[in-house]
Length: 411
Figure 1 (cartoon, rainbow, N blue to C red):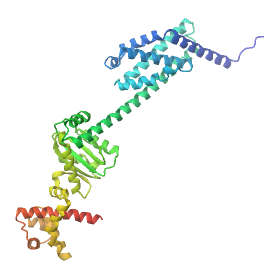
Figure 2 (figure 1 turned 30 degrees about the vertical axis):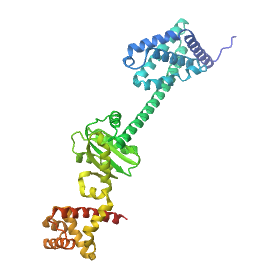
Figure 3 (figure 1 turned 135 degrees about the vertical axis):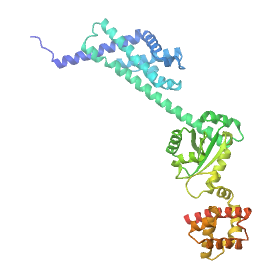
Figure 4 (figure 1 turned 60 degrees about the vertical axis):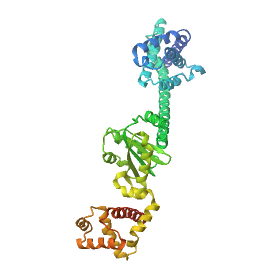
């Protein structure tokens, strides 16, 4: 009586035998048909994927890389140790194609063709041995898919890493071009040309220059600002130069006041803004925007022309204080109640139209009270509030006083 092998053990042996047969076929393909498989894969790719014809991938480069990755897949099918000369073949292709600018979908297409070429070769060899129709053989052919999938994973990972590296390198170059533009554009025409090229901005265009004080180095600040501007069709570039946050926005015919309202994401910090014509005037725009910051005591984005007296006063604090002492000194010497009353009226005067009725309405005082206080100002200071030169001195002095008073209240 013949002892029969258990069915499960028999199935296991058949499966093992099928896998070994596939591995043996893969070794044979690797040793005897690799060049033919490569030529076939190259022809299929050139016929099915037009991106390669338009890319920087040469015929010799394509053939060499496909030969190596097919060899890598076949070795993976065999389960043998992968030789050093092809161990990184897939990763090398991924990085190279990224550097050559080949789209990732086109690269993945080539690996789908690898799968097709190897599958067809495996089935052809299986038919020649009379086993192609066996269930175990077909089930074990998953080794082909797994091998090509391993190649594909390495290719995609390397491609994406290369793209990330390129993106970082490009951003570094853009940042350097922006920094040089900010620092030297008014004396170095090459800095303007390089920045225009790197930042994709025209050399001659009306621009809004922004400078922020104490804005943290946070990528989300840039992303949010650029996205909001882009949604309104506005080109821009933002970055940090030293410790300063800076940005360029092409106005493209828009009013700067309207553009500023889009930048409400910067409202938490003091940000100055100034309009200049052309990239060569960016350093001037930076100086003007910084002058706005010096005049600010509250956060928010403010344009240069929004408060000229404050900007002028902020440009030279020593000179501004001397002016304020000369103009307002006699008023500051008044008793507390009288001083508070006079400054209430004087502030309403310089911030409004100068109309007695308007001041009375703003301060909730009688018009005669307002007239008396204004006359007190003229009598004590020796200035005339109807003489333009004296009015200008009072306006500038009061601008300094408001800033100094604001600073005192926050201390």
